[in-house]
Image (cartoon, rainbow, N blue to C red; front, side):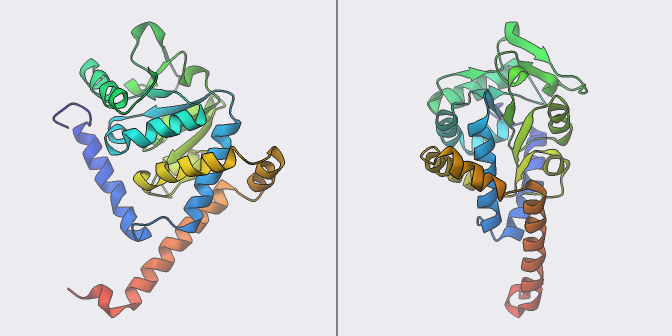
Length: 236
């Protein structure tokens, strides 16, 4: 935060989301792997995929983001709610240091705005999110997810809360900690790139976002009931 990478409000938002990781047992459940697989399929099938980067994501997993970007052929684009030139440059440096080939979103000559939003996250890069057909927006706010969906784009997100607006409006929502999910998505992408189109089509037919979100809720309920039944879990 003191380096202008993360906004103060971002720390609060992230702490709120991290609480859900305790409900998952701080590990990746099987349903999340299926969510990640569906997400990677959409991104690989997209003609112009883009990965949207905010301050929290840039701090948590910059090297993994760069690796995923290269694996998917999806450029990184900085997009911020609390946008300042200092924060843009600070985040760009983090991504550059992590090995990024190209970072979009900070050139004022390449900026457009998306409708339905009044805050600064409406600003997008004309070479990136503006023309993309699938946007990966981890740790996203729900109103921008909805606005991008209304523009006809597929939206992939990572959100530990399966009941958030982001999770419910995204095309695919991954209920997992981003530090685990990005690493897992890289490996899934490598595997799927070696699969035939028929294999990928068959796999995609078995995966559906709403069903997977229901599985996430059922898993959380199961764990809470299990913990409540274990005396050791309630010992202080």
